[in-house]
Amino acid sequence: MRKRLTAETRKAAILHQSKRLFARKGLHGVSVDELARACKMSPAVLYQHFPSKEALYKAVLDEIACSRDAYVDAILSGPDEFGPVLYRTMLVYVTSRIKDVDAVRIELRSIIDGDKVSETFFKNQWKGFTEYIEASVKELVKDKVIPKLDARVAALCYVGMLRELIIARALGVGDACIDRPLEHVVKDVHMLFLRLVGLSGRTVTLE
Image 1 (cartoon, rainbow, N blue to C red):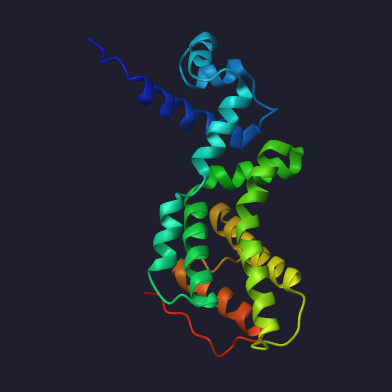
Image 2: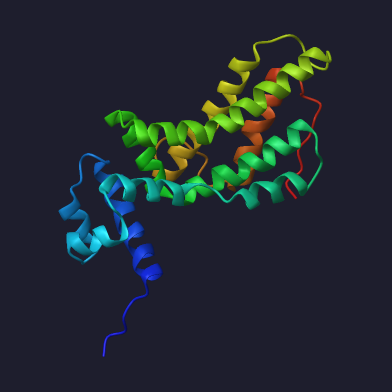
């Protein structure tokens, strides 16, 4: 006798299969019938778990988000200065994104398709890092630790470099230093950023 799946297990399977389809076709490129077929169920059963395709899409996006606990652990696991904290938190994010190729594809599709739901989601994912960098750089400039510069531009440069790394490494395109450990590549990008803003004397440990 075939074992009946629990509602939680079935929901997890729906999210997994739907994520793959959304990554390939985007929110508007896939129908409810396609999603149901991929999940091996009828549209009616699919609607029992998610009231709409948009609700399912939002649930997929929520699954992509990193655990808040992972960031807290990263923040508390070493020196509390700006440079080391930024490196550790970004390493958590970059690692999680590279492991999730479908999430990277969904982000790129949202830009191509002009899908505001996921575009806003991913924008907010990066926003926390951008705001933290911008505020920290402004404080360092104010305290005359580093020369005067545009903190917003500095933040966007840092985020842009790592965003490019995620895309290249996850999708296997371009020269993403594939043969080198990820933490070392992220560290190189990070140290380049510190030099650009005038913090070249600060080091980052990998432990």
